[in-house]
Length: 178
Image (cartoon, rainbow, N blue to C red; front, side, top):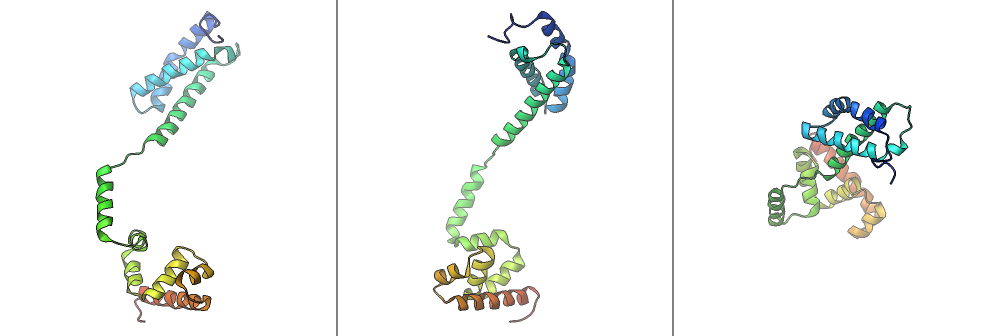
């Protein structure tokens, strides 16, 4: 097996181990705590000894070991970022229960979370047919044809409701009257 103890030269081992204090200093800068830093150094040496057959004698061993250590630290940070999903199950359960008891439509739930209080109040104060037209076009980005089919009205009526709804919403947000 390449990279085993008997395949490596004693000079390689000695020179690699001479670099330990520098690798420990680097790993302490890269890691979040001393234990993680020590693990990084250990893993770096493990990788280096296993791959010693790929190291070209006469080249910079220090740089090679530092590269291995740096790559290991970067990969760990990346992997930890992927796996650190913390879920507060109690909060999720409370939110689900609260949503179930509200009997709110998906549009109402999205509206309550996505828009500020003034915009929400202005939208809720509009007639339903105008509010639905503005919502479907501007929030859900539905085409006029799809809106006409969904609302079961002609396309011309869809365009008219959108225009009137936007104008009314604009006036209400600026404090004007209908």
